Length: 291
Image 1 (spheres, helix red, strand yellow):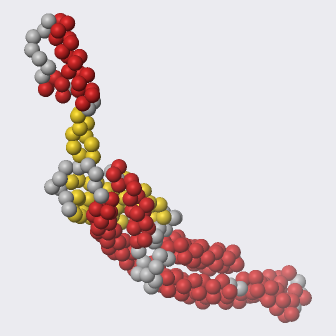
Image 2 (cartoon, rainbow, N blue to C red):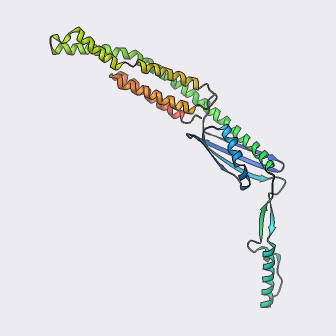
Image 3 (cartoon, one colour):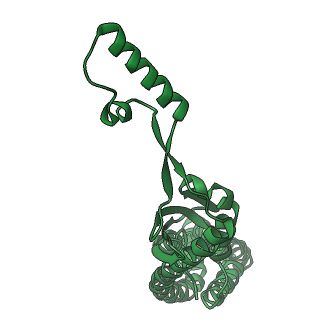
């Protein structure tokens, strides 16, 4: 079963007062590119996150967004900068004495001063963080994979239909190709007969026909084209990432099609080759999004 490279998944898990929410967004990319946006306390786990994601997603540009909130306990506690508080109290009291002011140093006045209070994150064991994050990430990846598989199934259906269409076009080309040499043979005979009395020599005509037929022979290209189509269908049955292999086969199919077009020397064959290339381009666009 082929998979698309685009998808979205979300997972949220709560363990021992910790809660992580993970969102994963993936789009098509030639290689695997994983970007993580997470709270600072998860920086030591970044390599673990990438390893878990890359184990499931082989190709694509993947953005991982992680948010964390605490349930049942605080993640940070207020800290008083006591040396700074002492300095402010001393300063305010000195001002009261110097200017003969009434009142005292209030709590509101003291706490309004910059940098007097700060928040310090509480220490959470890395093992606890890892266990909760792993489960949330697994849930998000599972949701994303389901979306990728659904889109992959739809893509496979479309590609199979187009491969069947290519089979039909190829059969038309195979049926038309022998007629080209026969028609050219008759045109050559007519032309030679008009030029001179001895120009219609059967041996000379046979030589010209043989040269033309050899130059227009597309049997090798047709054989390779059919082989590539069979390989393409086999890849559609695989469960491993096959996007790069499909991309290579599309290039080879285009190569054979171009060669057939250059050998055609016939308006009808050229028309059929153009349609063939058009369908191959549509398959190529689909393949760009296959993992």
